[in-house]
Image (tube, rainbow, N blue to C red; front, top):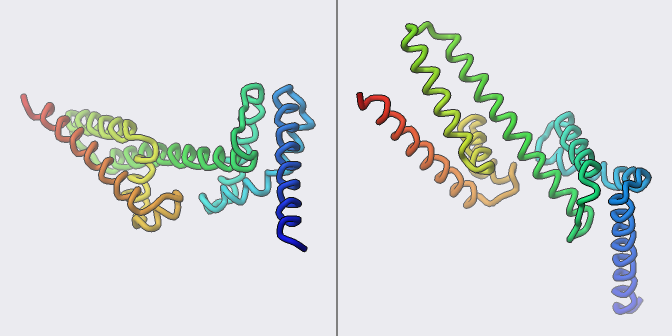
Length: 201
């Protein structure tokens, strides 16, 4: 078959798909549950695959995908898609993956702090100082940009290499190094100021 015929056929298929997606999105914005259901069944399996590749945990992946589609329905009237619907949903899945990882990081930080306090028997004054230090350090980590926090957590908490982190977050190793440098610089600066305030009296 001549190339120009093949190319035209591919273009027609692509155009038809885009028109179909736009029609579904229009119906979705109008609150059409049937359109939402069709979108759900068209893309659920693919989005689950995307989430699974990032999380390596079927339960977490399912939770992420369910949240993406639930959010799609909640915000249906305001949804605007400038790319393909598949790309739009995949980007939403990746965002939810990062958000889940950030929540897990916060939970692990709180658990680690509690375990340290429970395993030691400091004096009442020391307990207050430790509590204050843990709270301040937690606040410092929370002030880091989201991706910065994730990179820091995967490096320091999970013990992953820069290459592993890059693969896990789908970013370059150079970006991982840059984010870690930024995180450590901010944390060191914050801790330095904190200790200066604590021991200046």
